[in-house]
Image (cartoon, rainbow, N blue to C red; front, side, top):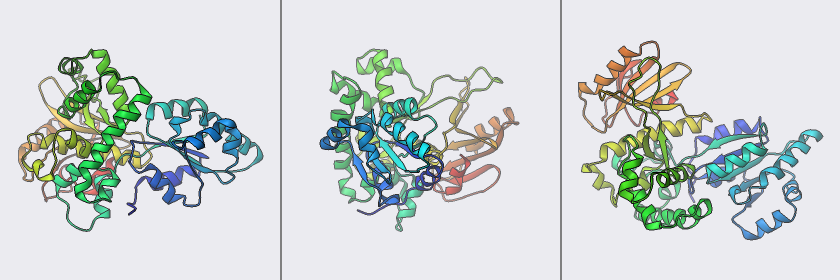
Length: 394
């Protein structure tokens, strides 16, 4: 299978020079195993989805881990949570004896993996997150032109980009079937799968909007508590994520609800019933899907650099809104996101208001759109979303 170079690879190798264990989480099929086996081709590979492997491990957890004298890649670690205690014992003994082995733990459930990792592996492991392919990773792996609609429609799962385009629908349907029928039942008991699938579809129709849990509960026919529970599971499984509102002590009239996004626009489009890229050319939610894709790229850029994302959005009670705020060592970067291919001076209206209202914090402001022109100014610039310089702001 064709290998697509992943930006996270450099961060993985860097942190492994400091920590003996790296814990990598991310959604199913995001390329975690492929990345690890590409970077460490000679390292033994353990997959806890193999029943026999699990049985051997449970006979003697510490002895099983210790038998890998040059370290190992341990896949789907959430299926054997005691692996972290076994690793703690082995790593501590290695330190005592002056030995150094490298282990990589991967898993598709952020909640279970990170909870067990923090309990047992504090100071011994570095957490990394691998999301589906970014626009930059896709464009670097493809010489031919790719339309914006194709980028949104196909999303970022590597298997889609290494398979015929006609296979995209089958791959995404398989993903949903696997996620609902296997992963969810391991995390929680969902009694009515039809309501949950309806809930997923309703979430897809609300991307880029402020989350209204009560409205989702009414339309799905479940309680608000159930909605909260389902959203927590979707976040832990890297299906959706929440963009929090930017907070400041200067202006207390700011919104308090987060925005809802999907971690992959391919899955999002599938849930919306979109079956061809050309449907997106005039689709009513094209602007929201475009915004989702661009915001995702900032999220991926932060994770790929081994950083904790510091992303938010601005909206006050009068309706003034900035789609994305990025906080970094230089201060605040503000981004307006427009799906249009043409330029309109009004695109800068809210950007300029934000710069005037919060001048000490704002170091950089620009509009990201789908057009060809680029004006690379320090503030109030105009960028095509494919420009890799944009995502260096994290």
